[in-house]
Length: 374
Ligand SMILES: Cc1ncc(COP(=O)(O)O)c(C=O)c1O
Image 1 (spheres, rainbow, N blue to C red):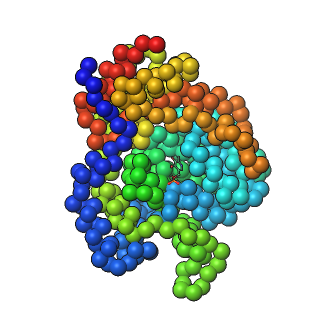
Image 2 (image 1 turned 120 degrees about the horizontal axis):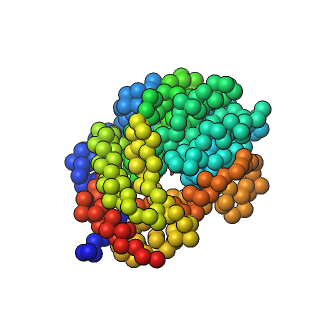
Image 3 (image 1 turned 30 degrees about the vertical axis):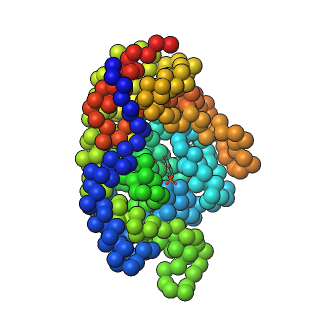
């Protein structure tokens, strides 16, 4: 087995593959002389709305801001409970606290790792106002089931789509069954800029209007302000994203092809569980997340992979409620048991996954993993 280095990200390779398109957009922005809420932001917002099949898209500073700006636009705040899964990136719950809401953490499905609709039902109280499903690792949560629950109890749905741009359900599109979709464009996401960025898309005009004001110091007219913040997507980032958006479909297809190679190559390895893609769903593999059957093996296997030149990581080895000092004197609540989320935290490993990985690198990861002996 030849020693090959397999990095976790391919940011520079991706830039090199469409350098001319990105450089042209950057030049266009610089020469426009307008860098904040300028013409490139407007153009990208229109492109994103068209791509998402949504009436409105609004660029903001990052994916965390996208979430709390929507919560505020919906009028959610102190005393309101928002339900999400405990096994997500910290920002999903953090955004709830920024808005002054109570994060209610529930379990995930044991196979998909997305929020478990049965756990949502059990967590609902008179204070529940919204469900915030996370399309974890690149696979949609079961939005049709979640929509039914929201209709039954009169709840908002805000999709945390930081990890799943270009994914789909079997019978639904992202954004079709919710009030708003929030996404992140931090560089490591499937659609990422050279730094931070985020966006919201929605079909509700009132959410669009409110978020546009909130992101810009509460202002929609020069010198006129109400309560607000500064959270805008810079035009330079909008330009980079506009160049990259055209490629997202092909990049997702390559991720899916790599996942298939991993699935086939690793299917006989007894010590691990492979990711589960729901039939008919387009899982875009933001992360190819395996689990060790025995949680005690997780760190041993990560260390072994790293020693062999495979840059494996974990997403997320500590669930939100397991973070030190939780809930930090803030308002949060668990609706347990959180057995699947805790098992996931204890045993997850992310293998390298980005569109520019070569077939040889993928095969090397497979060979190294198959050769593992405790
Ligand atoms: C599920 C999830 N939600 C929210 C965020 C927050 O996005 P950002 O880092 O752009 O604030 C991220 C990623 O970082 C994420 O993975």
